Length: 99
Image (cartoon, rainbow, N blue to C red; front, side, top):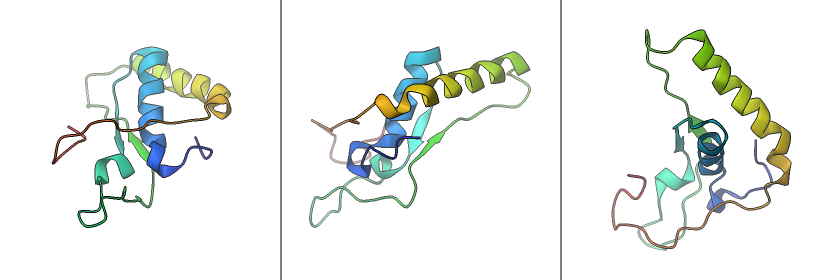
């Protein structure tokens, strides 16, 4: 959804944040952000894919909940091209920064 945002600015994280801002939907990214940095070079590792995970438990959400998620994604898609930058990490713990 954000091809203009490079992997080191975490497009999967951008979508997770936009979903929260748009509709209060909590998600997580499965992407370069989660991979972290190369232990030798300290450079950000590049994931093959930049995903945002929507976990929907069975028997908990109704069709109305799924419709809200779909509407939020459609709304974000309409302005996605206007988002020019992702995010930069200014501090992270030494291990498991995605937690």
